[in-house]
Length: 204
Image (cartoon, rainbow, N blue to C red; front, side, top):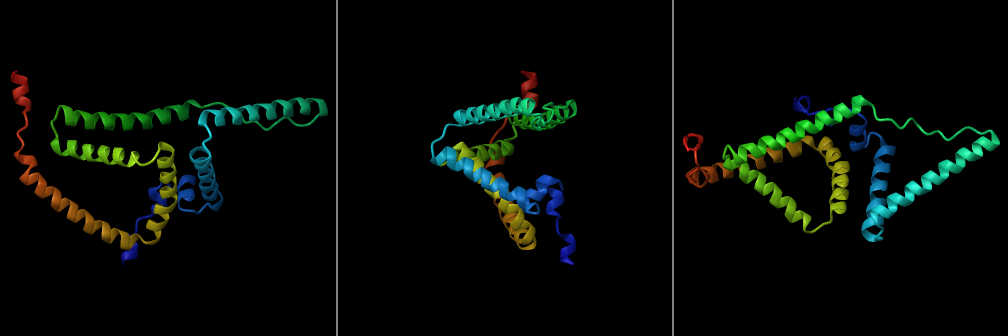
């Protein structure tokens, strides 16, 4: 009976190629992402290689290979290098801009609720999230954080898909505890803080 209430992690992740990689259904793609990200992290963080120099050298090598490949193909009557049509479609640009617009509007809405609406609870939530990010960022570089994010993306969805029931039970208990503590703080501290109302601002 409880199995019928299981959430499809694959569908929650979009149900496409990205979900297959994150859930290790596409072993080649998942392994390539893990090995590639590990190699890049080691190259830049441990070996001390410069990102700009790396990109320049890779592009330089690619251009040289394609140039001599094309010249030799013309001289030896060989097929030209299989370079795809490097063109970004208008549909993909519109889709990306729509997604970005949703996130920007959400961030502006949160900023409006904090600055104009005086939402103290939302202000504390944003403050705590930003403080935690800043605190964690003081221990790791940006590239290391990205690499940790890749490792978590390749491990957490698989573990949740396998142990979903047990994890949900623990999360429900933790959510109830956090909600209870937040209600106590809200009743004892937050509601006692005087906030200027919108009517006072309008009359001024």
